[in-house]
Image (cartoon, rainbow, N blue to C red; front, side, top):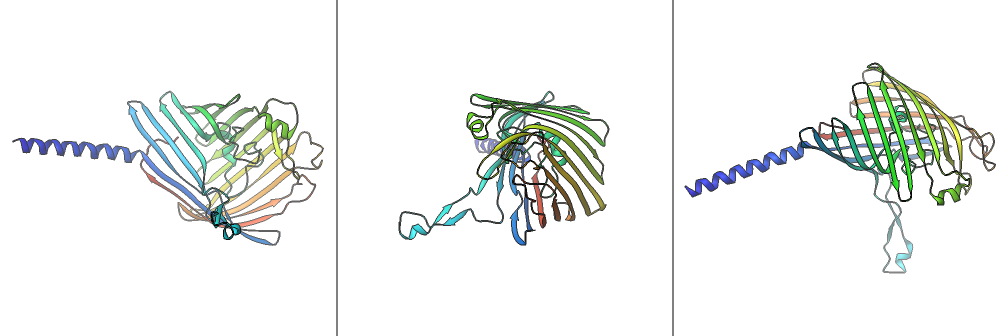
Length: 364
């Protein structure tokens, strides 16, 4: 009798553990996007990585109505080794023959949080609420996102908070036709704040606005000059989306557009406009087009007075299957760089493979 009782206990425990494991596995997604292309410009041909990434997303119900979630997304390079040969190693045996010149993986996103019917709150490196609006036009296969104020410091917008915000606490609330985002970045003595509001006027039409205020560190102020203690960015956007057509536009004003003429860095206020359009000619064939335009409202002396950014992008994509596609894009650069020169046009053609394995029901 004791043997049967022990066996029943073991079977019950095993079944309970298996059930727990299934719950855990159902809450995990492994996803990624592998991207590479060949670019042709200035009589040169170059194979380039195109922001490839892999990641994990987790979502688990804690109690009724409350879920915990987290994400880790890593950028990776498909086309280059991250090591360089070190010739000194032949002379100094303690030295490695190869030195790491760039990390094999970089953190694109990493956060953890809670979600309920009252909204979600997350802590970590995550897409800022400013991007709730600027994301609508940041959908070209390669280029774009240059005039919205999202990446205006030539980074991913992490420190400023307009892109993949670092050291961020973000609250989001979504109703049927309306969503709200509130953001704070706590970086030692400096704090940055942002807010966004998006209204889905109809099933196809959305309008939105976002504001971000950024407090540069003293090191940055010393580098770019000026006496401002805060730099503000404001954007308004429009999107019309159906099964065949995705049309979006935004207008922004930002006070911290940065350029790197020569060996210096300067910052200045600028206005920007972006337009994006994608249309499916056939079920597997889409065409894309649009532009980015940026013009300073005042130009620092070190920059050519005619400096402006005007990029026109046209391209197409063929979907062999929904997650694997070939794309091509041509960037026509009609602007003037900081030295008064005309930048090169670029033609690129490549592949993208998106994958997502898992059963997590809630996407954050």
